Image (cartoon, rainbow, N blue to C red):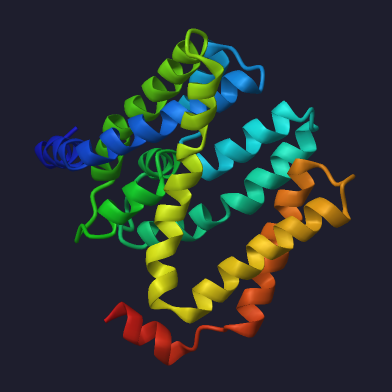
Length: 239
């Protein structure tokens, strides 16, 4: 590892400290949900270590808790985490064309929304920077999950139930600000909520995993058809 690699690794590690704090707080609730779904402390922690994606992990835990199949988990993860394919492609073109495959794989493995946001601001991008960010963020997500499982065993059910809602509060905090700024996003969110409720009441036999897959792909395709992003809009947004 060169001096530049070590410098970028440390920089990414330091820049991701706020991500560590956020991950620790949110994954605490993930641990509670995992415990309620029947996962042990080791299983939940290992899941968080290998899968640092809140939406995908919450969906997987819900499917496990409802007795879903492996194929449902697989399809739901593909649908929910498909955005990482685009993020990885964006970061890939910012790396040195001669960059080794092994280092590119390290970047893709630790890629999350927050790490992508930090890495996208680095010009040029050294693969050690996002990997350093992952080294900081990953312990927060894993330790928070572990503590969530352990504390849930001694916490009153009423308190655990209340804390389990904080994850959904985080999702609301993510979608509300952009919804206020863009009517298209607001309409898509409202339609998504209505479609999810309709799916729950009208198709009660549909499993949790398949519901995630159908709604994610269906609503995404419908929103893209109704609210297409024009090339001029995309160019202005980048400016």
